[in-house]
Image (cartoon, rainbow, N blue to C red):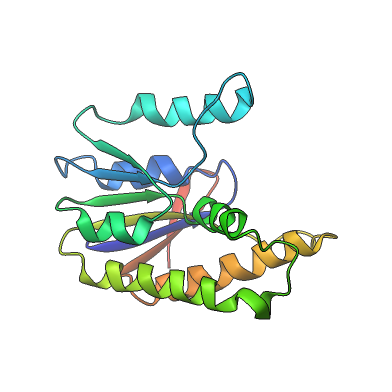
Length: 177
């Protein structure tokens, strides 16, 4: 196992499975691009973050950053990224482009994905990334929801091309693609 993409729906067991893949890897750089947990502002998000944190081994190093390509490039250990969908939504938030035509900021998206792919290809240790499998339900009535589904699909396809394995999680069960 060198480079693995773990995809699936909400609460499908993606993160837990990804963590198990690296359980015996020694020190791991756990890259999380999520928003910081603030129980006062969003107790549900804080509980999710806490549940992830408490089950990680203490010798794993947590790297909270939106610049996941740089974090992968700098890591000298196996890496777990959780999650690509969160990175994508936070990136779009940072660019402030949710309501702008995609063609006007496509270069930001393409550049960020290319940086990630370059770091991914050049990392000499095991890499595992968790991502969302979106678009199996209804098409969103909101342009931002449709955009997120489209771009997540594009990122997932690109990452899958540089992976040794892709795993789809369904009801806690891994399906190796």
